[in-house]
Structure formats: C-alpha cells, structure tokens
Length: 122
Image (cartoon, rainbow, N blue to C red; front, top):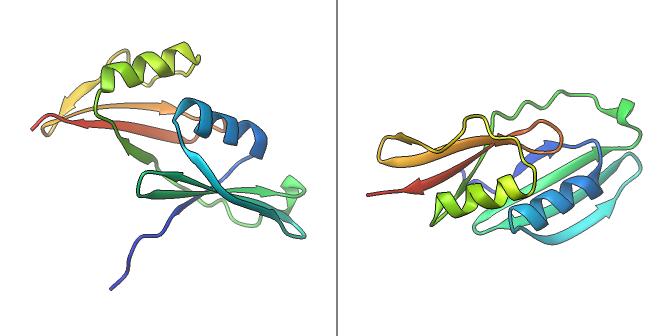
C-alpha cells in the first residue's frame, strides 16, 4: 500500500515562499537544509506535508516537476478568502463556488503554483 507523504514544489525563492505558506496559509516550518545544489524546506499544514525545492542556481533544475494544485481544507472559506485578499493574493474567481457539496476557490502562490481551498458543506 502506498501512503501519501508530501507534495514537492519547485520555488524560485525559498524565503518568499516560506513567508507566504507560513504567514498567509498558517503552515509551520518543520525542517530545512541545504545540499550542494538544493535548498529544501519542509512545511506542515495539518496532515499535509509540503516540500519546497529551490535549485541552486536555478539553472540546475533538471525536471519541470508539474504539480496541478495543492488543496487545503478550511472550516470557514469566507474568512479564509478575506485573509487571502488582505494579503494581496490573486483569486482565480471572485468568490467561492459550490462544487459537489463543497465550496471551493483557487488562487496562486508566489511562484504561480495553483492552490485550492475547500470547505465541506455536508
């Protein structure tokens, strides 16, 4: 059986990304270290673990590493959207949409990564 452990995303500036994920989304920094050509930072968002990968130098990146999106569950999507707007985050649409008994909204992180908030309304 395979068990999900984390999502790795390539970032251009670890400090900017850590500030976004920590201060805007409420993630906590678990670990970070630098190797010869990589700066790796691990964040925790509830049960989800996110690995930020910065190539040193950026030209050392060998794979595009596509990630469609990271999804975060929230209790109050309207409050979360207000927090995102206050932080200057660009939303994919003006307000949450109802999809399959859930309110959802997409937005982008500092490197253009697509992120999603989900609130169950069951």
